[in-house]
Image (cartoon, rainbow, N blue to C red; front, side, top):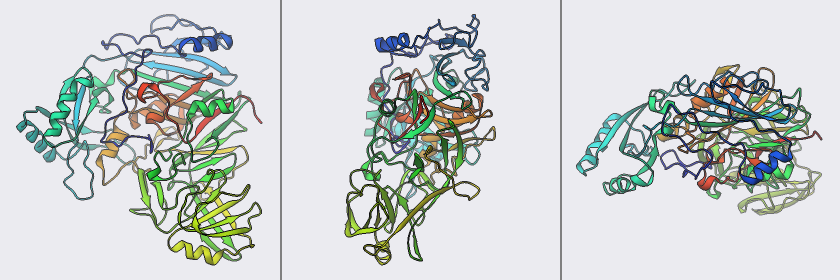
Length: 592
């Protein structure tokens, strides 16, 4: 979830109609076979590729020998993943032990496999309920779905006085590396068979003076809740072996940074074998330039977006088809002669810092996910990758040609970037400093670079790419979920951790295993037929798939995987439609 995700205290994305992944009512029933492709187009694509589709194998039945039909799809019971996921455990570390699990594998190219995993089945005890937003009682702290016990009991009593029977539930999260544990108490009312059945209770709670929203109890991340541990879960896994794959990895944002495209549009434009959505991005013009990466971004060797603090990113060596998870910081400068000024950002609206993590910003410099910090005094550089024109507004803008020479000094912001050139915008007090530095016809040098955890500059070649993420999930083979450090714990909004980290949502995960294989994973969520993952569950899944280092990418309604020319997961947006995103990770069929 990103700028694109709903606030933690609001209702989740609507559940799309999902004819392929309907949940079953009995926890003991195996999941229904789940086709990898949809409709006639899917069947035609399968036949055109010469693939052989084998019957789905359920636990306890015979499976085709992995790798015995090169280029074919094979349906395998858990434990039979064979060469597709060689470093993976036989079962996902997800939910209760002993759940049914199937893995359907197909080879997209030598060294590239797509594995669809279905785990668990529906539970008839899961239901819809109404979750009440509780008052914080503290100035500057947002109301949220969790609060202290006294507040929860008081609200329960007030609802009872209005004739509404409500219950108070204690919420305890898995303990993460720097956060988690006791989250407080929530108030819920009713048990319903559908979202629509609870509408009357929502209206009565509103009349009593409280906001509320419908919630499916299967989306709770409560580890102690036995009812939540049976699934169903649907995951898609891409595995890319750089020793066997003769293609290329890349990240792409489309024609420009400030417009969004769907993952399938980006994949089709590049002729990709497969793709997943990538980093967090600005979702609304009120928070910056819509589509702009909200964190580190580098494409084909060019740094185009600054980091958020030192949050983790996926660093890609496209030519070698390899990747690594690294914490990156960013530094930018603009200089002339012996004078140098520090940049605040690159290719974003001055004054609006999505996900925070800059310097001199309000309310602080630390990363703060899905929040927008502000800074009235900024220097921001722009390249032609940003869009047709730079952001307009008061301030100063210096225009540089392809040789770095100053061609114009404009008394307001907003202009086209010359071909091969750049501009530098200044607001507030920085406008005067930039005016003193820039002189018409003289060179102005703009520098921008990432640095790794060791403080050394990250060397980027023409086939290097960086996409932002967070929080960190795994480090050196161990769970290392740094939700606090990476900005998912908000002192002024306890609902952020509860809704974004603790509860289950669609997730996109990237990581590498001990052999250097890149793994890209999507987990469907916000559906009764696909519960999604908490952040702790995402880390556990990554580890059980064999990853040693892993990072969470943008999720929620952005979570999308394309393989073989079509979307293979079910996005959580209304009708299962894709969300247009900021960028995507692409698996390309041939190296340049």
